[in-house]
Image (cartoon, rainbow over the protein chains, first blue to last red):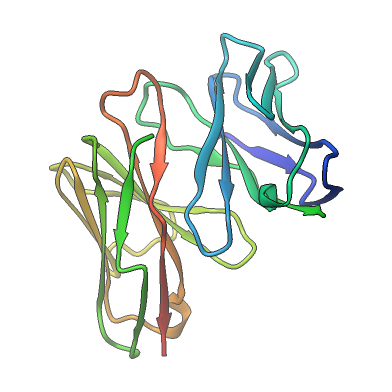
Amino acid sequence: GENVEQHPSTLSVQEGDSAVIKCTYSDSASNYFPWYKQELGKGPQLIIDIRSNVGEKKDQRIAVTLNKTAKHFSLHITETQPEDSAVYFCAASIRNTGNQFYFGTGTSLTVIP
Amino acid sequence: GAVVSQHPSRVICKSGTSVKIECRSLDFQATTMFWYRQFPKQSLMLMATSNEGSKATYEQGVEKDKFLINHASLTLSTLTVTSAHPEDSSFYICSARNLDGSYNEQFFGPGTRLTVL
């Protein structure tokens, strides 16, 4: 089955700096890669996703890149703000199937004011 | 985006009692709902996949007789923790797949904090 690894497990950055979180996956059939943000005591919220037919997607301060050959994808947050502090999870799945999402282990991001 | 609700948000019960958690997709129909369990500072652990009108598929190691799942309609799935014990205390989260989505989006509920005394 699919195995998703996520690094780093914790990340602290100064407000205004950029944050990068990386994930790797093992199953070359995976073609859908969402990123979720989870605040304390709440459910995960989808913040951005990417499909395997594109290499990069951007939404304001958030971007995701995908390297299919190397089987890794990354989340980039620019101009970080304290409200970006949360746990971020990557996931991999096979699009349009009943297959489950395989989640990474999470990255706890702290943005220091 | 699509909205998924869970009820209750928090429940405290005595050991040996049963607890029911509801998961609803509010503005879309979901043929598939997922139930996760999350321990502090850990990732989401998939417990079971719930398909409308059919039996749930449980992950290895999850007792189906203890965690009863019912997906009676395209907008509602329930998880019942039967004869709860302190080790069942956890954060339970559901998610729903958007039937109309062109791809595999899953939208998560806000979670239910279960504490078994």
